[in-house]
Image (cartoon, rainbow over all chains, first blue to last red; front, top):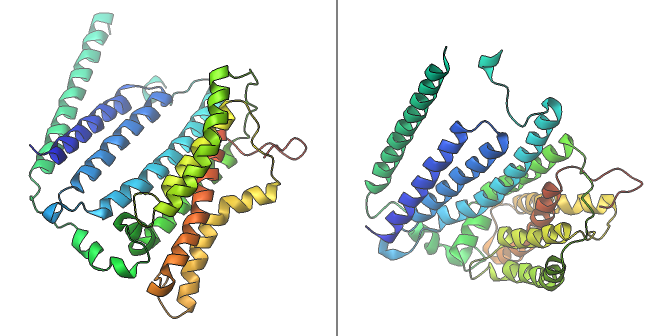
Amino acid sequence: MTGAELYALTGIALFVIGLHGLIRYAHLMRKILALNVTGAGVFLVVAALAERGQDGTPDPVPQALVITGIVVAVAATGLALVLMLRVASATGRAELPDPRSE
Amino acid sequence: MSDAHAAAGALAARALLWIVLAGAGAMLATAVLSLPEDGLGLADETLADLGRTGVEHPVTAVLMNYRAYDTLLEMAVLFLALVGVWSMAEARPRPTAPPGLVLQFLTQLLVPFLILFAGYLLWAGAHEPGGAFQAGAVLAAAGVLVTLSGAQLPSVPRALHRSLLLLGLVTFAAAGVAVQLGGGAFLEFPPSAAKALILAIEAAAGISIGLGLVAIFEGGRPSEPESAPR
């Protein structure tokens, strides 16, 4: 197994762990954190795949995508946290209502 | 439904979730591992025209030249996130508990270097890893550190603050239109002017990204006139 493949598989593991948190936990803070873990996994996969260039030159296009992606992910996380605070102040709970409890 | 039933149901749901996740992970791993060894990367194409992009580092060339449209829109996404945050709430006053000695000392020690380093990254981006996004992130780290240490960020007039937040997007779009008026396509930088244009865009974008991330970190629009710290 090459180093790039190891990084890619680690990224997939992170993605799956984050997906688990996203589905499993109701608290919005945990969902936002889980989404960030999945994001980190995706970035790791993309960066690892950039290594598969011909003659060992890494492909700069995926690397550039990851750089902008990280900054946009941070901004989106900030927006998500503010939305969470709005939900919490409107309903008293940082969770989305459960449709089954109606 | 009895408690035992509910507990068994929850256990079954959790087991099902792990089975689905394991399946998804296995599928993704298979997909990644079965990719052809010599992929259809764009490394050669990127390097072939590097001399005409105005920068020497391939990643910066992709960001600011080959895929400048993409980067411009990413700046717009960043700005939209900020607009979303500002429309949602007013920034809450931070707790004014005095910061610990360590945080205070570290802030005083690090912030000047972070600002210097952001400037260096901006310049270095032309030939080494670096550039506007990295510089903006470091600048934002400095701003967040100042905010966390309880110190006030320097108070600037509202109009100036907002102009600086928009500076990156406006400079980027203006450069794109300018080359279009010069006869090229939108954002098609002519090789002779590319270096200067890209440096100007990156400087503006770095400032806007840094200030924008700090403003998002504040968690709301600055409080209105009379107190208006920023």
